[in-house]
Every structure is written in C-alpha cells, then in structure tokens.
Image (cartoon, rainbow, N blue to C red; front, side, top):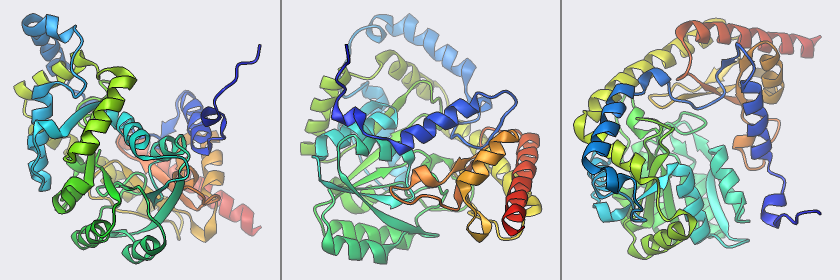
Length: 399
C-alpha cells in the first residue's frame, strides 16, 4: 500500500533539508557548534523553576492538570501585556494569545491570512523556519533587502507600488540571521510605508530583551496599532523547552480568527507549563535574570568578534551586534559559504551557511555564527579552525 501524501507535504523544502542535515551533523562527538540558535544552558533557572513547579502543584494542582482556555493563562497574559510598555506599546491581557513557541504563532498567522498565490513579504535574508512555515500555505514570497540600519526603505517603497502582500514579516531587533537592528529612522519610515497599505506588519521579537549595549528597540506596534501583530517567546529568556510563546494582537477581528484556528489545532497550550512559568515570574525578578544573560552574551559576543578580528584572513566582514545571539559573516572574494561549512564540519566546527535564510539566493558568501552556547575556549578554537578553512579554500582557488 502506498500512502497518498498531501501536495503540501510533498513539495521540496530546501530549508527543511538543510536544517535536517545540520542537525545530523551536530550529533557528531566533540563538535564545536556555532550553527544553532541555542541559549546557554547555564542561564536556565533550574532551582527557581523547581520551586515554581512545587508551588503550582501544592496550591493549584487541579487547575494545572485540567483543560484550560484557548487564549491562555490569565496571569501570564497580563504579565506579557504589561511588559510591552518598555517597547512603547499599551496592551491588555485580552490582546495576548499564548502559543506553543513563536513557531506556532507563525503557522497560525499563515493559516488565517494566506490563501494559495497570495503575496507575503519577508526580509532578505530571513528566519529560515519562518520561510518553511510560509511555504506550507503556497504564497508568493517577496523579499526586501537589509542594510546596516534595517530594511532597505527605498526598495520597500518601490516594491509596494507593484505588489500587495498580505503581511510583512520582520525581525527588527538583533535579526536572525544577521544580528542587525532597525534604526529609529528606518522603523518610522517602514511604519509610514506599511500604514499606507492594507498590509499587516508581523513583528517577531524573540531577541528584543537581549540588548547588551546601546539603546532603542521600540515596537512597530507603537506606530501601527491594530495594523501590527507582535510575536514573542520565553525560549530565549527563561526556557526553550517549555515552548511558551505568544501573539500580541490588538486587532479584534483578527484575534477572533486566530483563537478559532488555535482551538481547532490544539485546544490550548500546555497549561501546566504556563502556570509554572507565571509562578516563576511572580516569585522572581525577570530583569535581574535578564541582566545575567545579557552580561554573559555580551562577553561571548565580544570574545567571538575579537577572535574573528585576530584570526580571520583579510576580506572577511562581519556584523557587530548590540544584542541577540548571532554574527553574520561574509566570506572574501565571493567564497561559497556552503563550501566553507562543508569543509569546516569535517574539521570539527559547525556553522550555518546563509543559503537557507534566503528565498531564492543560492551559493551565497554569507554565514551565521552563534556565540551564545560555547565557552570562551571553544569559541577561540573554533574560530581558529574556521579561519584556516577559509585560508585553505582561498589558496586552493588561487592555485
């Protein structure tokens, strides 16, 4: 018997194939990995979470083990809504839907907004798992390039003269994969351009709390109100394993459709984890916890940038992030990042070539380096190996 798979799941998925290959490579023993986007496990508040688990079971065990509401646990939604004030946005708990990580939020928005053939707009490059999700709904994926200050506004303005995307998906703070952040001027101009259309702004902000230098980071929600959906997650601040993310949606009509779709999908996100997380946030100072993480990541980012400056051959360029988890490196003389990646993994270093972060571009010279999940020693060792790989490939090309 041959099972008939849906057309949706039968399509080639370059991003998925690439990620699968990377994950398999990551299982190799003694591999130095700059390839993922994992938080540093030394930042996980294990003892505090244990105390929250015990407290929830002792005081609200029956509620924690029962079915719950689709929108999510009220105290947790209230906490999230209040925290948006630091990004210049006023929200209430009614504007928040708790999701299974921000990945589910991407799927929910796609299912509710996108019909086959519709246009959607993303940054170039963009988060590869978002591209995977959007592709499931058969849209025409448009892209707008990035500058050091964020989206290329001139390119965006010209694109919107000829296209009508359903939404613009952007990661304005410490973007994945580039680590770049939108300037205030770019945010304001992008908001003005979006406001002149019927396009929804989808702001993904998993790294916004991870700013370790500089200032800024106002949400597009401040400028666009109901025309902006804001996605967030506790995966980068507390625990990725709990799978707690959210959609902040002040648009009532869209909120109703999102809730209806989520109810069909899973009824509700794990209520036990929601209550444990809410208890942890009530009993502990999240800002103090975040200060520890930001100090750690600033140190690791500085170590990696220092090693790149010391060991890499001339012509390697790289972004200098003010937060988040990533550095975006560009190889000299158009050297293929996939070629570098394939050779580096043979020598015990995993990096992520830039290709799967692009909708169409292939053979690119860019790669993503993650600094958050390695010791200082591993960072230095890994960058030295990577630098030698690049030198060897350049020499082979010349000779």
